[in-house]
Image (cartoon, rainbow, N blue to C red; front, top):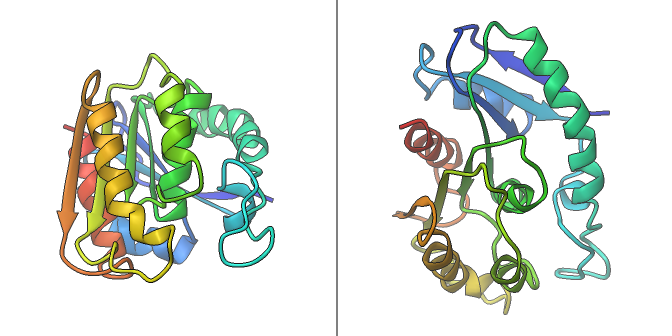
Length: 207
């Protein structure tokens, strides 16, 4: 069951939805300007099943369940309910790190819930995602797209994961044609400063 935790209560500010563990939400909130946004941490989903856009075998047979559409359908019901709890909420941002960053990008093709997207160190190496992005239209309400990557993330022995920088650069070239889009490189591998990288993207998306 998907649960949520709300940080902040300011009216007329962006509402940032993040798929993460609640303890990660605490760390992320500590890095954000509390008077400029509301943070909603979503939890209770299965990472590899619910955040992957279609089934794939990457590390072992059928390890990615490809149920992102079903999870997104849950959010289509849950998020309006959450917004009703808030005092005059502003526009909605979807942000995520790693596979949650991939989900954020995929979601902008599937729903009109969000206007700005943050994919920090997103798993854009996921099989066929770049091809999907190049052959489908982003929802018309999307205005800002943030991409980032650690400068050591492509130094992987895995044949898919080592393409992550090339895939990120391809997506940046695609998205910047019609959207406010930035692609930032950060020092370190995939596991360095994850909350800091995500906060950095959220702050950019609120500009």
